[in-house]
Every structure is written in structure tokens, then in C-alpha cells.
Image 1 (cartoon, rainbow, N blue to C red):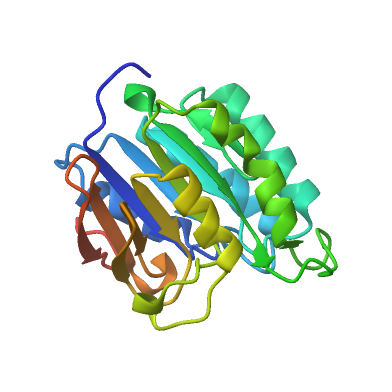
Image 2: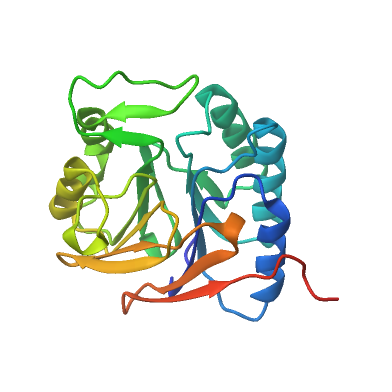
Length: 235
């Protein structure tokens, strides 16, 4: 993954709509995309393992570096992890970064934590019926980011960080992680597209792909262009 990174395709809330993802890749065929990011929920409620496989294969066929995290409803975590592990063997450009990190194009570090992050330290963690973690676990899992001080960074969260500009509740723990590690871009879950600065970081929500929403991010200029994809690709 030695190429330079300029444009990042940000996607959220797929809920198994793999056809929309394929349509999006077709519509953006002439766009010079360097990396794809996805924040969950990824799988369809009725058949998560099957849709994970279809989703990851679509990413693999696009032949782009891609990074993703699960959403709260991508439980049980074992199904998600198994399919992520299998596809990463077949397609080396693909990396799940749930509670971990990976080096992408141009030595950019992609890291994140999926599911719901709740600041209350006594929150009961869950990975079976729902993916949910107390804030301290998010801090612990992402300590590894501190070992990459000189790397530009992209963070993926399905829970939004606390930020008055987003006009929605959010996690103070995730906001503090952003302030500590200063990623260039933070991509979060959420229903409606939005983009705000948090310190030196651009915090953006691409909206939900199952509603046709996506975003294109200029990595170096920290600017974002929101778009929508048709339900059916043109022929």
C-alpha cells in the first residue's frame, strides 16, 4: 500500500445493502478513490454472515484499500470477526479495524472501535445480542495508536464523539481520544450527513448508505463532498 492517499470514500449504515455499494462503485468509476471506509451497521438483520461475505467480496472486487468497523447491531461479534478474518486472507487490501489499527496507503494509520461506546465506566459490555463497550475499553483498545505518533491518522467510530457543533449526544471519551491523538479525519455513524471540526480533526458523518448517502473526503485538505447514489445502476 505504497501509493499516496488523496480521496477517501466514507460510507455508513449499510444494513446489508450490498447492491447499493456496487452501484456506488459503478457511479464513481472515474473518481480517483484511494481508500474506502465503512462504519456499521454492516450486515442485514436477517442474514448477517451472508451479507458480510457479499459486502467484503464487493470491496475486494473494487480493488481498493478498505477499512471498516461493525455497528451495534452487527452482533454476535463472532460472526463479524470470522468473516473479516476470512476475507482479509483472500484480499490483502482489506482490513477490519475494530478495536485495532492498520496501516493504509501513504502510511496513513486507520484505527477505530465499533458498536456503541457508553462513557459510564460501569456499563455492561456486550458482544452477543448487541455490540456495546464502556468508554474505558475504547481507551484501552486504542492505546496502540500512541505508538504511531508521526503517522497521519483516520479514526472510525459508530458512536459520535461529544461535540456541540453536531447537535446530538455523543461520547466524551471518544472526543478525548480525538483530542489526544489528533487524527486528520474522524468518520462516525449517524443518520444525517454532517461535518464539523473538533480541534484540528474533521469529524464527519457520511449518512446512511441504505438511504443512498455517502461522502468523499479530500484527505490532505480535510474537505468533504456529500453525495447520493441511485437505487439502481444505469445500464
